Length: 571
Image (cartoon, rainbow, N blue to C red; front, side, top):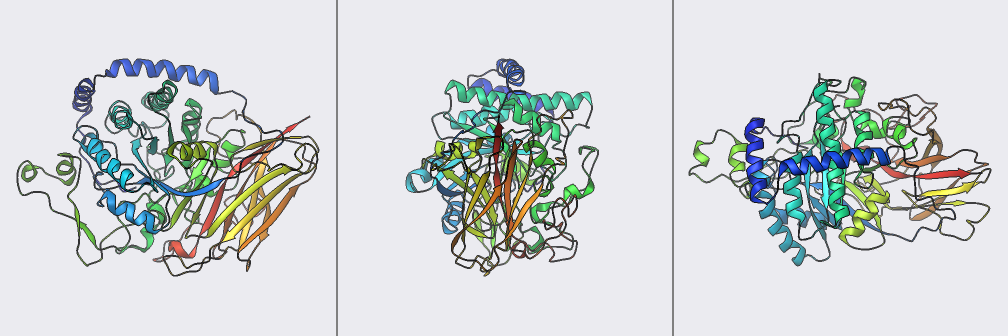
């Protein structure tokens, strides 16, 4: 999340440096760009209007094992973070994390000067020492013309080469494909680079160069430069690669940090529209709602407008850990020697080796907006195989739900046709689609396990309600910048206040006549009100955080969100 200033060379110099590095790796930028352009054109033509596949007529999804993960973590190998790899992994295990991804920022210090290679050596050693923990090496990609993205690669002999090649050829910051004015020819050119990059990743997976890779947009509305049409373009470039977006950003502690000020917001969402922002977003879109991005938190909003197409686009949550709230660690000093003494800023000094000096404990509170992996934000992934590819497969399938503050200990969802050939089967779960006959009843079964321990804030989490949110599938919109799903509403708010342990609640859709989708949400009940589009759409949704000091205390306003299930109606 943190974006400490860097001094990337002018594009002509940066491309020259990148080309030199690619040549040393035995690669050609021209050949890669040419192949990606062809791939992107073919991908768009073949998938943009494809009918959704994968409907499960009877509904017999497997039983799942739920692993807690964090797909967005930084270390001293990023120019604006400070912790050792080992420190992050110790914290992750302390807070119950089963898998974690290191996603250092793209730049020359990472790609050229040893950051990617040297961090991989440490990661390989930690994989051997901690076999119970799945440790990914990924990348935080500066998307051309847009914000950031997580790129996650399954471990293998080519993981480092793929990451380095990808950032050298496709990174928006390195190639200076950043922040064009919306609607200009330059914006169209830069946006096309993002599509080509995703198509290229898909080709690396198809060719077997890597076992698997997924990508998803990070903190999409922090700057308001990820337009709805870009989100759709990335998704359609390769739907098995660009799987979704962060529903809630990291940096959830920015409002209660050591040096917090009035107006600080969870996720560091304190920006206002600029000339580079998508002009269709209201000013409200730049603020969090219950700690979640406006695109996710708004019932009938951006996320729902994409789901109403009947196409998968999933959400996640993560720590984006750079600097932990109120810790006492500080980055050490660089060597008192050249070239460090002559370099003008932190970024240039970091870039010498792509690594900051080891931190040390000062015993005094430092600045920071983040929580440790698993401490506050958790991503739950339903796997059938405890492996790296098993996690990526679960993410791709949308078998994910997220919570803040350890609000829930467990969530199981099953959807069945009440009558007909679905009887006796397991039903489908999160991220799936089920085919039912017109006029049938559909049962949604939601099994919740409450949390029986106090979280890091000393609070015993208590779930107050479970919301069933849904709407019709209406197909591809005429406007690729559509960000409204007017048919989506809260179908049912189920009061579960005071219930503990493991229990099941149900919602039945009667006499279903049209294809639809639904998703789940719930909270501790501490702070809610009429949603962004009014009480008739969302009577008790998350609220925008205020501007007073302490308004953005994340521990007193916690929510869970689950990915959708699609219900296809057949005659």
